[in-house]
Length: 122
Image 1: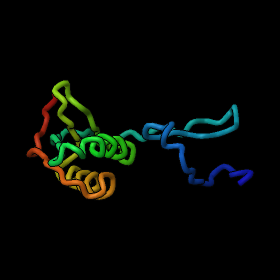
Image 2 (image 1 turned 90 degrees about the vertical axis):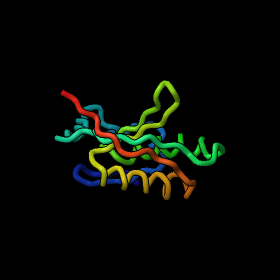
Image 3 (image 1 turned 120 degrees about the horizontal axis):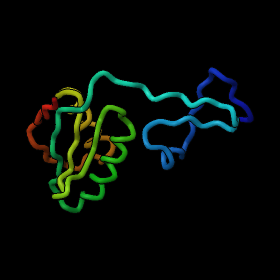
Image 4 (image 1 turned 60 degrees about the horizontal axis):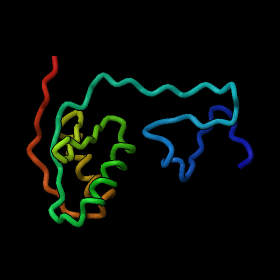
């Protein structure tokens, strides 16, 4: 495709290696970046996730990276103790994230999750 005029959307394959969550790609030096969306909620419901089979740990780590890229509202982190934490905006959001992680990103590898915990901030 030689040209994509302003106002049109184009899908690219392979750029996910270079973008974290969002980005603007242009060859124009004067192009303006599309701003990130600001959300009025934050990920406050957290669950710890671990694999039932230790051999699936690389799948979990890669799956968490893919989940983090696919959903701008989810936050995935690993604690100093090696615990993998997924934070979402509510229990329903976390259920959807966990289903996507297990079914889509980990190809059905069994997971064990802790009970949801709500973090309170002032």
